[in-house]
Length: 460
Image (cartoon, rainbow, N blue to C red):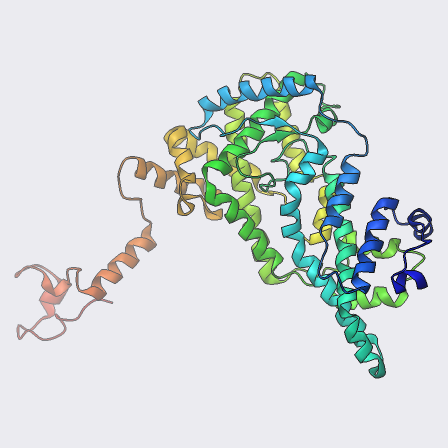
């Protein structure tokens, strides 16, 4: 440790340190962490080194060494080709500009990690700041000057620890997901669709459904998800901005951090690791975060509901389509271990809790105005159904039916009363005292003929 603190890495065996610490990190990864710490002591490193997360995630993703075989690639290419034909009948949204493909777990990590980094960065920064503040508060007054110089080091250590944990979670997630749209948010780059053959077998192991039917259904769902985000180019930014609204309010519970630090044993790092993964350092959500999370859940449910309806229509020829659909819904509702760990790590659960209600809304719209009218709701952000539309699909159906006929959207009694009030204030509405001469009105009966009140009084 003296040599490490002085920047001398000679004679330090990362494998022995890994066994001594009990941390489940491979020696190569520990060597990278030590190199980063050495750079921090030398003043060459500042901020979070996200390459640690990438190396750790790729190490986990590539552990089994399996790639995509030629047979797997050919089978999935055929499934994607047929799925494209079926989707042409189920939606007006056009095909992707580049073909879908089969990818390895490592390729999925490389393609999606920039988004995970963007989601996790607020938490990493908060943890680094909390470590620095806690160190300054605990140190005696005569050590404050020295502590101030160690602030950047503590930020680097905290950021490195979080980046390593994020890499472990994303790496484990790569062993669970079947396609790019599995998580709900657009993790793949725009216009790209992919399936991971290494995880395909695990998905269908206990379903007792032929592999060709599973491949066709999953390929159709993956393409529908990718088509939607490519068509509505504003949608990806809309989802990410909702996530940012939530992440903006993330803070670390400094009291929990200080309590953990007071009893932390360096020879037992599992407690710190479990605190990170369990979310124990993240305080209860604020009201603003809860509202942001509700908006995000409704948005994800609206997207997933559309994908569900389109996939159901496109795969109506598959005998086992209903069984596969139910398995997919259960899987999305529950989430896997890695997705749960991600939720604990950044405090965000990406599960569309109202997916069935949203699917029922899209089904009602499809039956009312057809495929073209339904898909036109994705053309502009202000046309997209809201959470109120999910609660009351009849109101949405009435609006889209009226729009399809070129009619004004129906209004309720409140809208009519408000329009009347605004018209009266502007002087455009007919007043009661403007009635034709001789009209039989109560005001006319009470008027004494001199043109004064009460006949001139406006009703409130």
